[in-house]
Structures are given as structure tokens and as C-alpha cells.
Length: 207
Image (cartoon, rainbow, N blue to C red; front, side, top):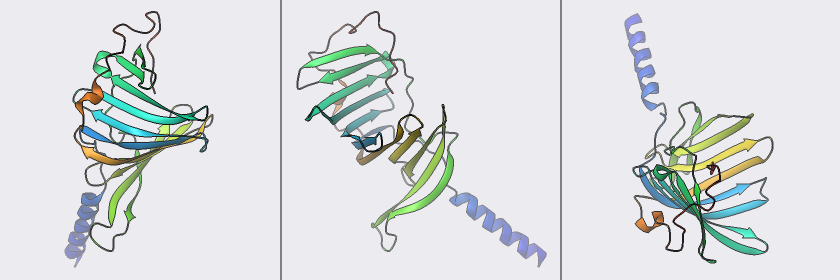
């Protein structure tokens, strides 16, 4: 009887360990959309993102309200070249700046703690829901974050952060496609300068 109980306990433990969510890294090349809400909902922006882990490149194109109009800006970050471009296609303006950030792949941070697992939608029938994991952790200066990734594929869905100074910021992503739809997303337009906008400027930390 004791042997049987031990075997049952080992089976339960092995099953729990097999089902325990693991930290993961997203596919190396993706394209999708996003929306950002920050400062307790007083500011909103939306746009699309292209992500290339192999080439360490990220392209963000977003629209945000400004002086009763909608301004569309594209930010192209080329980490391997330590440079990023801020592009306004409507005005044909482009600033080339030095980039001080290190490239970080989209992933669940190594120090993140697992908060829980849930199904977005319904589990009543196949295709009605998606299984996700929520992770959370701490940031410098008494800041905190939480992030949601799908269990299958490690696709990022939401990222929220709290700072005592600015409050909550929530980034939601959607319509992800594995791979890059348009290679031109990583090419600065013809009207971008060859030299930096300010040669004496210290490298910027974009984020």
C-alpha cells in the first residue's frame, strides 16, 4: 500500500511539473499591431510593429493625437548599427540619432514570477479560446510590471507597467503574423540624412 501511495504521489508530482508554464521566447521574426494607453488613459496611440531578432531590428509606426490632429510617426531602431530614425512621412522629415539601448528579444524575463494561467474566450469548444500565462515582476525605482504570453507559441499579448510618477501604462498587441510581411519596414526612406542630426548629441536611450 505504501509503495502504491508513493507511486501515485510521484505521478501527480511529475504531471504538475510537466504542466507548469515555463519562461519562453517569442518567434524570431514577427509583424503585428499594437495599442498603447498610458497616464491613466489620458493618452492613447496605436500602430504596427515589425520585429526581427536575427537582424536586431525593430520598426514601430504609430499614430497619436496631437493638437487636435492625428500625427503618424515611424521609429526605426537598428540595434546592430546603434542608430534609430524618427520619421514623419507626412512632413518628409527624418532625424537620425545614436541608440544606446541593447537589443532585448521579446521573451518572458528570467526573474518574472508566474501569476496564473487562464483561457481568453471560452474552453467550451475548440477554437473558442486561447490559453495564456500571466507573469509579473519588479522594475527599478519601485516600479512593477505584468505581461501576458500565449502558452502555445509564446506570442506576446499585453504588457503593463506601473510607476509612482506616471501611473499605469498598458501595451496591447494583436494580429501577429510569424515572419516579416514587408522587408522595407527596416529601410529608412530616401529623405533621411546620412549623418546624425546632432553630432555632439549623447546616445539616446529610446525606451
